[in-house]
Length: 402
Image 1 (tube, one colour):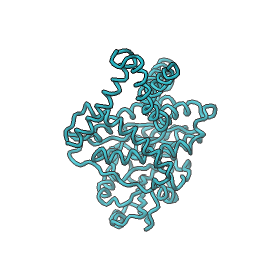
Image 2 (cartoon, helix red, strand yellow):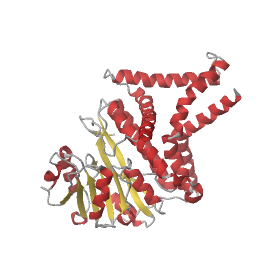
Image 3 (cartoon, helix red, strand yellow):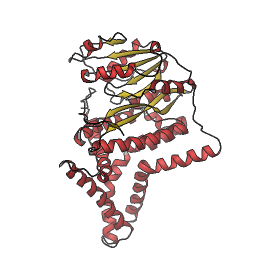
């Protein structure tokens, strides 16, 4: 029983640290550094205006391309210094032909569909500018996004800049939409602190940029291209910085089923990335980056979901030994777990009946996030996760930035 108690407290600490403790620790470190005049963010030079390429790899995106091209044309940056490149490999819905109607868009197309990363690897051969900005076809960019990204490259130590992902919300959000929106707000704050401490741990594929010279071709079966590309830039001695003023907005997944589909793929890609980037675990070589990588990414994709599962029977045995209804420390924590998972189950039940209580969205979304890790791990072991994205259905309705 003593061993079980040790296991329980260690597991509980790791779980708390993964989701909240790391954020608290980061906040304290940043406050202390600021008190000593350290870690002030690099502001860059607003007059710095290098030539850039907006790079979109797209598969059957005809419903989004007109809006995307016009959004890109309207950005606050000298038009003569922006090149738009679209790689549309495999598209058979007329996407490449529609894009060719725009005189300022370069289109590169092959009939064969080999996945997003294959299209990116091929498309990089056409990049002539010192900075390449990656963006998804179904996102809108903030008016000053290019300017906000490139000014951070004035710092020669910066090899990659990540923008912020924002979610369109509606007055009557689904659990997927509200949960995803709240999750990304929390992630955005962690990224700000990560960047101030040293480096962000991975860029968001909706909007990020790298120095073209630092591009390293990625394995064709890679699932999280944005994560692998950006982390390999950092492994070369540069940093990833974060600028929330450069942002991409997209609608949330249509429902939790669609969000789970997306999360499972991300989880499978996360586990693949941990294996391929295992050298980043060497704290003696990468120092602060290793600490950030393990704390912010590795634990969430590996150990923490398993401990969440094991904590339930361990807590139950300890609560029985103490007295299940004694309201001691173990019985109280056990019933707290039951209330939390009960709230997640109730959120699922009500969501399927189109009854939405936002107070239940957090436990529900949290449960879905961790369930996706187990399902993603199964896919990774089986090796049956295709590199071709199965697009999740997106929500529709009145759009408000979340």
